[in-house]
Length: 121
Image 1 (cartoon, rainbow, N blue to C red):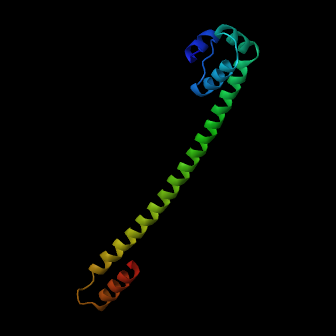
Image 2: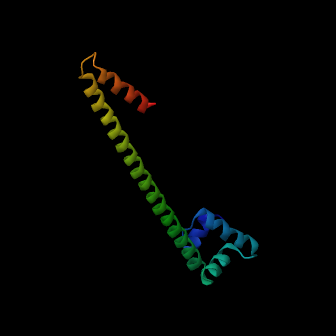
Image 3: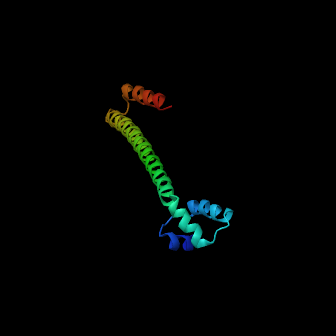
């Protein structure tokens, strides 16, 4: 019996993974398709598979929520690192501007350049 035949006989739509389990039950039985489907319904097959599908959905939703939480935390961390790097770059730019505004032969300029070079290394 195919998944489509099963779904037509029971009126129940399932996933390929869960149908594989149903098909294994069917193959293990000696019942014809119609009889198997009727018994499967009477024995609570729809409820059982529905509950399992709900469990899978809930599990996937939890995984999705956790993944979203992780990505948000990573984004916030990256944003903080970017702000820190931009702040440091801005401070260096201001210091360089100040240094280049000094007189060319000024001893203070050489001292500040050496300080910046040492910090950069």
